[in-house]
Amino acid sequence: MLFPVVLSGGSGTRLWPLSRQNQPKQFLNLMGDHSLFQETVLRVSKLPQARPPVTVCSEDHRFMVGEQLQAVGVPSGGILLEPVARNTAPAIALAALHVLAQDPDGTMLVLPADHLIEDEAAFRSAIDAALQLGDDGWLVTFGIRPDYAETGYGYILRGEPLGEGGYRIARFVEKPDQETAQRYVAEGTYAWNSGMFLFKAQRFLDELARFAPAMLEAVRSAYAQASIDLDFTRIGREAFAASPSDSIDYAVMEKTDHAAVVSVSCGWSDIGSWSSLWSVAKRDENGNRHEGDVISVDTRGSLVRASDRRMIATLGVEDLVIIDTADATLVARKDRVQDVKTLVDRLKADGRTEHLFHRKVYRPWGSYDSIAVGERFQVKRIVVKPGAALSLQKHAQRAEHWIVVSGTAEVTCGERVFDLHENESTFIPLGSVHRLRNRGSEPVELIEVQSGGYLGEDDIVRLEDVYGRS
Image (cartoon, rainbow, N blue to C red; front, side, top):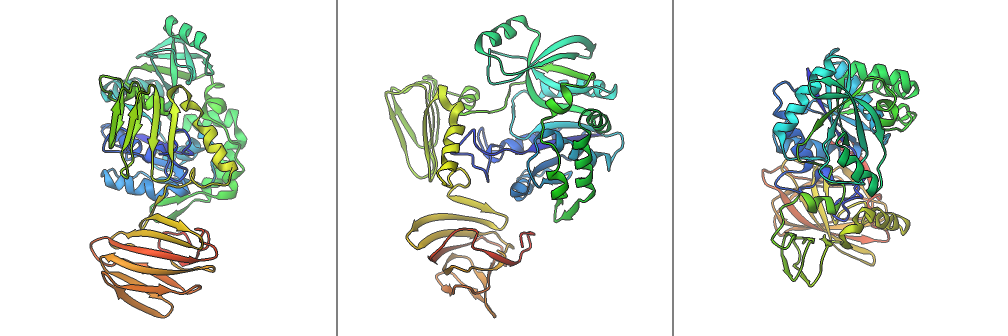
C-alpha cells in the first residue's frame, strides 16, 4: 500500500509577518481557498492507491492539523507529534515505523506540507514511475526540471538511466552561484532538489541503520514509548531528543548507492519567499499582485497584500513587497526578501513576540484577538466554538471581566456554575478557579478585560483540560 507522509514542520520565518511560529506558511491560504497543507492532503487523497495521509508535526500545531484535515474532509492516517525538532531524517523514520506497524511492505510518499504543485497530472505520472523504482529497492527523490537559473535550491545531477523515467543519482549539489546555476540549466542533466521522496518504509530504515544507526536507535526507542492522546500519537520526548538532528539528504540520500531521481515538470514551487510567491501568482498588466484593499498608481512588479483592517495605497514604486497584518507591516525590495529571517532574528534578540504569534491567536476551543493593550490592562475578543470549553484554570497575577456579546456561555467561577447571556457580564477575581464553556450550537463571542501586574499567557495554571494541556 502507498502511505502519503506529510512533513508539517517549519518555524514561520520566511513569509513573515504573515507566517509566525504558531502559524507557519503551510497553514495559510496563500493561493486560494485552501492552505498549502490542505492542498497537499487533497492532492494525495486523489491517488487511487493511497491510504489516508500520515502527518508529522510539532505539538504546537497538532490542533491546526486536525482542524484543517477535518475542514476539507480528508481522514487522518495518523498525526505523529515531534516533541522536539530534529530535521527530516528522524521525522521520516518515525513515519516509517508507523507505516510498518500497519503494512510490513508499505511504500511511503514523503511530501513537505508547504509546496505548491499546479500540474497534478504530471506529478501523478511521476509517482507511477517512482513506484516501480521503489518496488525494485530504490530510494527515489523527485527532481524538478529547472525553468530558470535558481540559486536558492539545491540541484541533483542525473546519472545512468534506470528505466521508467528514473535515473541513478550521480551527485547532489549545494545551492550554486548564478553562473553555475545557468550552466546547470544549459546542460539539461540537472534538476532542482524538491525534498519529495518515495521508497519502501523498510528499505529506508535499512539504509538509515547503515549510515545513521544512533539516529535509528533513538527514534525506535521514542516510538516504542508512543501513547495515544485524542487523535494524536505522542512520542517519547527524551528518547527523541537524543536523536542526532539531520536531513534525509545528508543522513541517507547522499550516502546510499540506491538513490534515484525521477524528473518532473509540474508547476512546482516551495514558496520559499515572498518573491517566489509573486512569481507563481497571477499578476496584472503591470506585473503586480494585489490582495485585499489595494490602490496602486504607477506601480510595477510588486506584491501588495493588505490586511482586512485597512487599505494600502502605492504610488510610483517598483519591485516592492508590502505585507500588512494587524500588528506588523513588512516593506522590502523584492530582491531582498530572502533576508526576512534577519528581521525575525532581530525580533527575537529584542525580546518581542511578533515572530511568535499573530494578534489573533487560534486555540483548539476557538480564538482570541488582543484588541487593546496598555499599562496593567489588556482587552481581548474571545470566540468559543460550539461544544468547546477552555481549561479549568486560575491566574496568579490578574483578574478578568467577561462581557458576552453573542450566544450563551456557561461560566464556572469558584463553586458557582451559571449561564451568562448576551449583554450580561461577570467578574473573575484574581486566583479564582474558573472555566468558560459553550454548550450551544452557535459560537459564543465575548469581550475579556484583564487587569493586573502581569498579563502574559504563561500566567495560567490548568487544572483540567480536554485537550491534554494540563
